[in-house]
Length: 184
Image 1 (cartoon, rainbow, N blue to C red):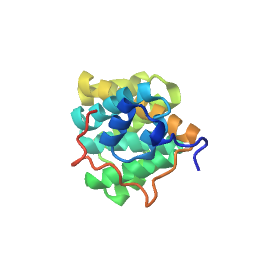
Image 2 (tube, rainbow, N blue to C red; image 1 turned 180 degrees about the vertical axis):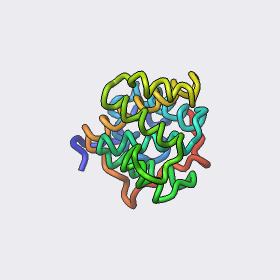
Image 3 (cartoon, one colour; image 1 turned 90 degrees about the vertical axis):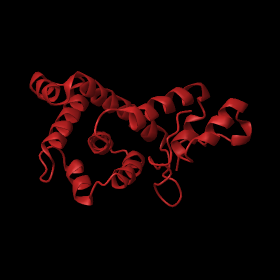
Image 4 (cartoon, one colour; image 1 turned 60 degrees about the horizontal axis):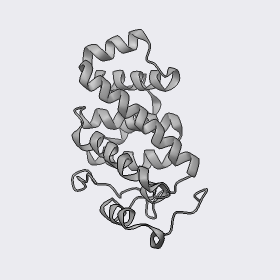
């Protein structure tokens, strides 16, 4: 159960009501409506990662899921396990991401991604060896994206866990990347 009540939609201003009406019906957005001035920029940045990013979508989801598992953020992992499966991730791959970069069944890129994410989460700044390997593989553009994705989802996990946002009734499934190409 959430630590604070979700805001009453009847009390939304017109802009917030319109924006919430455009978004997938997710509790994270409902909870964030307590800070309506932040909702639009938050969803725009999240949408940019999901729809405009240059990282391979499975690689991106490996990074997001790893952040969620390390953060022990059940809402985040439930939503992104569903997204990952929609993108073709197997249960075995999802379990490997949960285990970490030493798990069997990861590609070289997935191992490098998880190593980089773990380093950022533990140390804020990736160590030289990890950074150099990631830069050589991803190049500056994708490495910056991977760094920003990691940081964004660290923030998301902290929001979700601090407010104990509930997984939607019926479980994860409110966001379908193929259908929800929303950029409010």
